[in-house]
Length: 214
Image 1 (cartoon, rainbow, N blue to C red):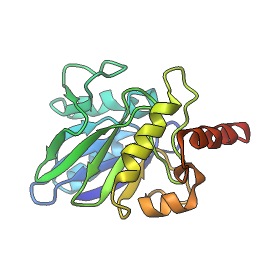
Image 2 (cartoon, rainbow, N blue to C red):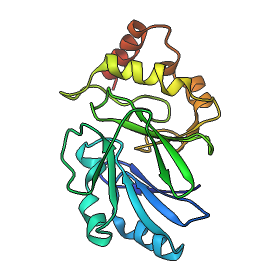
Image 3 (cartoon, one colour):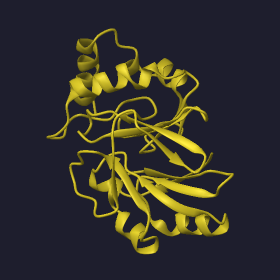
Image 4 (cartoon, rainbow, N blue to C red):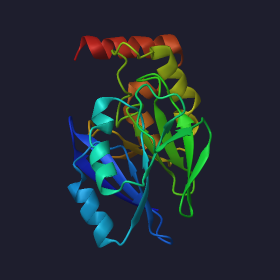
């Protein structure tokens, strides 16, 4: 699977154009950035855009969705089965642990609420990579200050799902907030106290200290 990352949007957002090399079928992870560079890459590589995967429906991650639909009206919008915001007639509802194909590539859906109730991560086991949206960034998790956030859910999503993945898994987050745009899970654990907690209580304290010192 080929991955092209594009930074832009509201706050160092990252969208990803991904495609299957054998079939040239492509998808976009989050509609967070201006479509121009994505469109040029689709054209240059002779790709067929089939899906847009939404990690969650915060406005900055769906901001350019209708621009994509204008250029590619038949694209399928893929997100959580119970979205917080409606995303139109092309919407495909995804369940936890559902496997969704992109050409010959397979993405496993992980429901990872906490930052937002409809948060999803998309894991490609074969390629050892996962697109984490705002659930996990380089060096820290997403924040839980929003009215629909839940820190207990975030702890469970991170410690019971993401940190159980193979340590060589590459994290592709929804924002470039770290020292590098992407990182292996092993390195992310080693450099961040957020991912070294022994209990939910410790995680809550580390998060509270982070918010206090921002």
